[in-house]
Image (cartoon, rainbow, N blue to C red; front, side, top):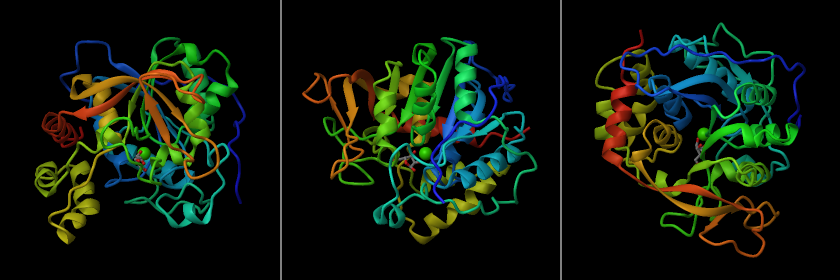
Length: 350
Ligand code: RIB
Ligand code: CA
């Protein structure tokens, strides 16, 4: 059964400030973050991205909101709850969000190509079994609205999946955009810049392709945006050498990473994989890791061969009226990034 996203009942305030677990917290105030994710366990990038965020004192994760994308909503929610349990961070509340994009109907192509956003299959047990804690009864969209409205100008939304939850929050709460501090988004591929081909279709990146209408609403919202598209992801090179450094010391995180990701490098020792959501998180922790350029970016939400394709240009062009200038990441200091990533993810869990 396909169910369109809907608002869950209740509008109770849902802000919970998570304590920072690591020593050496940054001197500046941490970014207050809503972590919006189409979560999957490592070796999926959302899993790695959350590990990095949890071990970064520059970020205070207020709550995690889940959305259908890589997996069904149920699977992503079950997996993120389990990772928080492994991390001993059950204090961070999880809110389930949209189980389908705004408009995108699952096609044969969607069902047979990467990603299970169209699925309504129940979740299978995460590694080690289902977490004891469940998602909050409040829905993700209400949580985003309540949290931003109760702390105007203070909350950053870190969105690393399809933008359905964020778009719905903006549609349901007029004026919300002006109260969001900033949005950091993993999504899109910008052909105007090098390495700008799509990964789901020739032009479209996965997150934007799953929900192009949502991406268009969010990019046009006027919120200050840092876009982390495939252009910058493709500057990363996670090979076996870096992987072995990551899992050299055993912790609950690195054990999980080795168990679930090590096989990839055993099967193909020359394998090099890109990092996606991890770079978006890292760019919020340390913006000097990436180089950005200001472009108008808009998304094609018309059905057809370019559905979900993002286009960028220093100047507005016909049809893109209403598009906004945003910061688009395109270069990465790979070595500094991966060294920081390994050092943090491999930290012991207290
Ligand atoms: O295109 C990369 C994006 O889609 C990332 O968010 C990753 O999780 C993938 O599913
Ligand atoms: Ca993702």
